[in-house]
Length: 225
Image (cartoon, rainbow, N blue to C red; front, side, top):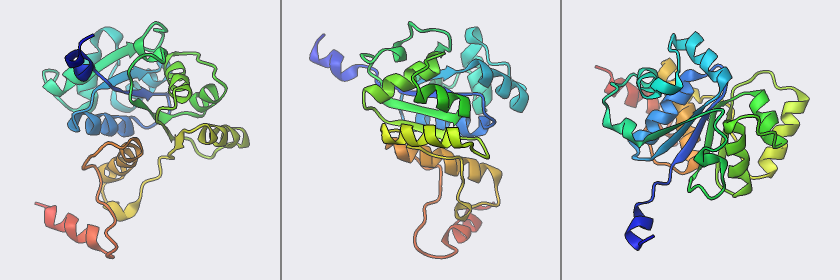
């Protein structure tokens, strides 16, 4: 491979969507990654398809993933930003992200169910999402788990601690209300923004604390039509 080919090699972030409630979190994170010019490899678990259908009415299909992802993001299917996405079926264990030699930057699981946490913690690899997460850990790449379960059992807490000790970032879906909490989308974007912060990806999803009380509220009021 020539030097030019090495420089142009695609290096995506793997985004896994598991079956917890939280479709808006996943959509906001993918939106933020693509807006930042990042490549994305997408894995949607079988359980997540049911959640997506229940929360949005969208049937996420392997053969029509671009159309369905566009609908989830609220974009047109022809949007050129979608060209940066590669979709892998959850049962495809020959997929690129299942191997440590695949040049992924890291992985974001958003939302992450307790079942996904358990499977990743013990290296179960029951599907591509869990396998890709295990690969991310063993390769010492960034792994961010946006946990969307409550309350958490002792077993799940122990598994999360084990994953944290292994290098994963545990990021509960806990929005900060100082960042414009009067809007549901602001709360969603806050969590997605914190996840992208953990990956080291620049974005404009959230209003950051400036040290001045009421600064975000005043800024939000100035932005209002």
